[in-house]
Image (cartoon, rainbow over all chains, first blue to last red; front, side, top):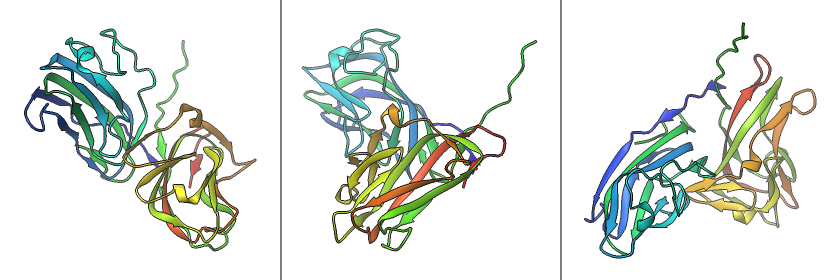
Length: 138
Length: 142
């Protein structure tokens, strides 16, 4: 038995510029995982308009479950700064969390870009409970 | 004047590493104890992660009532996967909210078990974590 204190992962502001690992079609590293954690809350905010040379989609998850945290979402749904990415069709700048919470995580968190290279800025924030001493998202 | 309630801190149950070997209480058909508890507790959340694939010479099933009350075939539980009823996935698992918030009273039932069915589970390891609130002073999961 031990008191359980909610931890905040380092907030990640990712400025996508369409380069490899940073907005090009493929993956973008978000958080590295050490051990296993329970993530009750995770938010993704569009800080600067997302744009692409053509149709692009993004999804958030891990290597094994690439869309388990956020579903595949067309970039035009994330085109406006101020939007929260919660579902595949964010429609307001104060979207509710809905059911996008409480994730058991055992792999590092990545975003996957498909279709065309993507530019823009996203801010990722997460709170977690470590499931073993020292477990963390960094 | 309003009555001020004290701060409440979530508790983590001790992590239990269950290594099956087919023996009574540890893989034979029947119950495998995970946690005991004292007093009344509200278990918010139970998480089970398979670190070593389960083995059975028969068609063994495993359940974790009431959290995973569906008896799943042991073949679902392979290494490096989260287990929830009917689901074994690597990486990330979002658990249905219907599995949250189970209330326990030690005067009625003082432990949380897994249930092995049909045939023994002779090898494999599951790591179990839980988060709970005390409903009575000094209640705990052990």
